[in-house]
Amino acid sequence: MDYLKECDDNAFQLCIVDPPYGIGEDGSSNKSRSKLAAAKNYKPYIGNDKKPPDLQYFQELKRVSKNQIIWGANHFCGIFGGSSSCWIVWDKVNGKNDFADCELAYTSFETATRMFKYTWHGMLQGDMKNKEHRIHANQKPVKLYEWLLTNYAKEGDRILDTHGGSMSSAIACHNLNYNMTIIELDDDYFRAGKERLESHQ
Image (cartoon, rainbow, N blue to C red; front, side, top):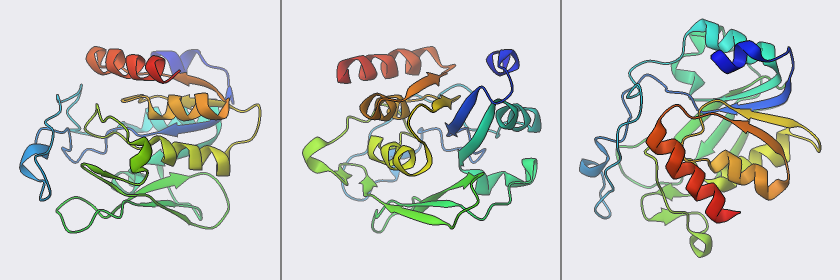
């Protein structure tokens, strides 16, 4: 919030954010939920996914960016009035388990709802030849962010991510040559994500 308050109106063409959903998914219960293999335990992060951001956050997000893609908004769209004709559906093709089959993202775009299918279940990933090392409980695949950028950004756009986590979005921006500003409050995850990004670069 400190950073956003310093930004000019429409400083970014697109923000892609994955804020806390407020459903308690902080990674601490992962180990007991896998049905295929022993799951990894993740360090709970700042806030522990206890509550979503407040209205002021979403107001600032919309002020500083021309367009927004907000993951998990189905859990809290009542906070900011998140009606949209263009929701993104990520089908995780994850088989039988007690995790969600898909995740939803609100967008500010006025196009049709779109779906991205990509396996993301423990040791199984959509691109096993380029398997990603998972460092964060709520990590999303780089391929997902590349798909979002390919479909919803254009050359020269400045991209914002206020909840950097594993830095998957930063890796995607690096791969597709987008200028990105990324923020992460948790020191441990910031260091791990920065190391992951720099290793990739």
